[in-house]
Amino acid sequence: MNFLAHLHLADNSQTSLAANIAGDFAKGSIEHFPKHLQQGIWLHRQIDQLTDSHEITKELLTLFPKTLTRAAPIIIDLSFDHMLAKYWDEYHHQSLEEFAIKAYDAIDECKDLPEQLVSIAPKIRQEDWLVAYQTRKGLNQTLASVAKRVSKPEIFNGAQECVKKLDTEIEIAFRTFYPQLMAYSRLWTRNTPPEYL
Image (cartoon, rainbow, N blue to C red; front, side, top):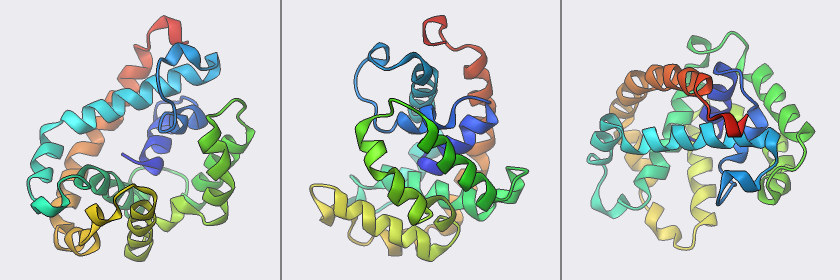
């Protein structure tokens, strides 16, 4: 799952939006982070762990060509965000545009976020990353942008064409897996280790 899904799952579980998105940038022991970020980072890690280990995700990975083996997990995360944005009205009562503003405000208002998140937060809002996920063009732009940020951009060669080809399989995987993840996120929230509350 990428930014949009983590923010949606935070909202779904009534935990901090900013803290959950901080999980993408939080390295090392959770105890090193301020108390108001700890539950969100912990939840973020539970979500990532289940996503990476789930049979649905593993099966989807086998459909990618060997040339995309290293990039495939990232491509799936971004594609799932695209599916969530595309069918947003089925998963949330607010419009995606309204939710995006709520998320951007939450990030801007939260203190002590990881430095890397603070540095890109203005760009996230200005380029409206969350709403951009709704379209194929937005997904392709995100894939291209992520490729530029990795040490070996060539691992993403052919990613856009592959995602288009696997569109149906990705949608089926997302629609099957995501409701489970929503349920798990609420369960994990109720069972957060006391030291992270």
